[in-house]
Structures are given as structure tokens and as C-alpha cells.
Length: 374
Image (cartoon, rainbow, N blue to C red; front, side, top):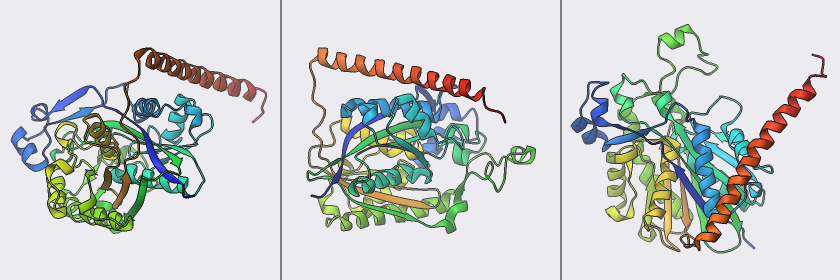
């Protein structure tokens, strides 16, 4: 029997702080009209001082687990796609695993820029189909506001923060992930990069003074790459599934720029109702953009049972990826409130236990280290 990867849970976390175009005019030489005309963005979300990629990932993951009605201990693997991890190492995914109390899960980060979430989704789907794992959490999360030069109007108007998560689970039923596609072209790596902080340009007074720890992008070249790649990747992933654009119910693209989304829709011949766009209100939150858009589509009733979806993205690397899936999970049923309250209360207790377990393990590790001579 064929094992398919079905999407059974989803969740998102959006920071409360809103940064409008008018506020940006106080920081750089720009205007609301200029930003809207070139990007379609009116406002973006910015993480507060206490929020990180890990903390937002944890919130999105908890909501995905709640939708799926799964316990953290049922997760086999956690993948966090991000270009802005809390640390270079350990992996942000490991911080998420600890906070959730996912005691049976492996965890790793995946770096593919804005394409990262779809890369992670494809990796998870193929691991499930191969029988290596049964239940996988995939998170796309970013705190891009921490690596943006707020004096560079070419980038600071675009990027934002947030997190989205989904859970894939093995099932022999029809539907779920139908086909996957990943691609890369490293010759364009310098078009979108963070020069400082790696082994080529390790942190120093020079790299800080030269602004090498800020994101850099050559917008025109990236734009041309995106408007060509997104429609092509959509067609290719549908062809691999034995389908065509005519079969597509909904396209969920990376939310980078409204002009890119419009050009992709025109190339594919899709009407406005067949494509998701929320870049006006959230800006470009990189690897988080597609799962956040997916969650909103579900919440707004734009996805129905057996709908054919394509999730498609592009990003630093240069990379691109697409996933075709048949929506196989019914929309969440409204449960009797007492049952939901009991389940939610139980989850809160589990997360508190996970935090306590983490503290105990840290203490025991420290205690055992006292008897070890270096």
C-alpha cells in the first residue's frame, strides 16, 4: 500500500507590532505611494524585543498540534526552515523540540531562504513516503527585522517577521502530497545574501563597520528570476502529478511582492480567486510567508475538501521549490466547548511539564559535570 503524506495540522503566529509605510517615511526617504506602487505592501509585522524565531516557531507549532489533535510525543521529526535562526548552532528546531516536549523527535534547521518552508515540506513528505517517519512538524519562521538595514529603503520596506507551521502524517488514503519539486542555481547566490557572520567573513569590527551583517539584495535581478521561476515551477510540479493548471483550485505563492504574484497569476492564466495574497498586510516574512498564507486561506474558507493546491516559492541560493497536494482533511469541526476546554487545559499542562523537564535535565547535566575532570 502506498503511504501518502497528509497535511493534518496548521498554525501561525504573527507579532502584534505593526510597522506602517507612513512610519517608514520617518526612517528613510520613501513614501506610502512609492512603496505600494513597487511592492503592494501597506504594513508589516515586527517582532518585539522578547520575541525570537524560536519563540514564534513554538507558538505556531502549538497551534498546529492543537488542530491535528496530536501530542508532542507523537512527533518523529521537527524541521525549522529559517534564514534567521536564534543561533548558528544549536538548531532552532532543537529549541522548539525542547519547548514542546517532543521527546521522540529528531530536529534540524533547513536553510533555503524564502523557499525554505517548501523545501522542508518536500523533505518531510518524501521521508514519510519512504517509511522513515510517520509524523513530521515543519515550521517556517523568521525575524528578518533583526538583519535589515533600516536606512536602506530597497530592503527595509519589504521584510517582516512571523511563523507558520504544518504537520504531515502518514496515511494510505488518497490525497495529501502528490508531487514535489526543488531547484537551485548557486550562480545567483550573491543576489540575495547576508555577507557577514559566516566563515568567509566572521564577525569583527570591520564587518560591523561595513554593515556586512545586514541583508543585501539586488532587487531587479531577483524580480526577474522570480517572475520566471514561480510559473515554471508550478507547471512542472503539476505535470509530475499528472495534472495541469486547469486542475488547480488554489495557488499559494511566496509573499514577496504583489507585482511578482500578479505576473505569476497572469502567466498561469489564474483568476484572482485562485491565488492567495496577503503581502499587503504582512510584507515579506520569507520562509514564514507560505504557511501563514495557508493558515489564512483555511480560516477564510478558501480551501475545501479535495481541492488541489500548489505551494510555490523562490529565494536566496538562488532556490525554488513547489509542492502539489490534494486537501484531504475536512475543515475543523466545531467541538462542544467543554471537550475543547479540557483538551486545551491538558495541552497547557503538558507544555508546563516540558518546561519543568527541561530545567531538571539542565540541572542534572550540571550536577553530573561536577565530578568530571577536564
